[in-house]
Image (cartoon, rainbow over all chains, first blue to last red; front, side, top):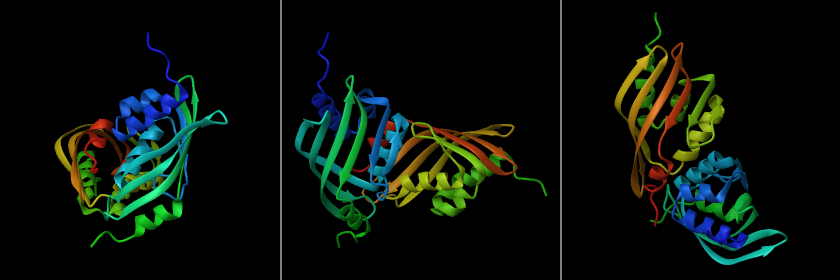
Length: 135
Length: 126
């Protein structure tokens, strides 16, 4: 029988699954009642509840931007797991590039994520979304 | 004048996606219509349906609903489709089974069934 994942391992596995766009794995790691929140000013922002809410979040994000997260730090604090790094990529519609700092805060319970809040530099992302693409 | 048949309504609805006119697409629905894109959260009413459609079409240049087969049982219309999403950097081809309930010439319910990973694995990246 395998050892249960630590909270840090759960979050690391979530980022691996997000990079692979593997929703089957993501749904193993996210509690069915998981709540994901992000600034509602972003097209994929707002409050997303449950696996179907996370699917809505993922599809809206991925069809709007092509992005990859680079993790600079992953640590536990105040009973949560904090990930800080950068999100880099391009806007799907225009090809406009972005390279933006981000901080994600996760709450893990019994080996599954029950809460995630994603904070990025919203003005920088909104500027990228409205910028013309490369000539 | 009689209402168009449920099958005709759904044929016209599927064809409307190629126009890219979200107003025209949303106009097919009743005020209390339920749209459930099955892996996603269900939404109710034209405003939420519009927001959902805008959510997954923001980066898309155009969309085609290629109707492979269609059949009806009274007000319920079943479709087998290949939905094609054209992005600037690539194309997603997604097999979809969709069920529609048509009331008085408008769509009162739309349920689509597809493989989420099949869609996500084709969205352009890199």
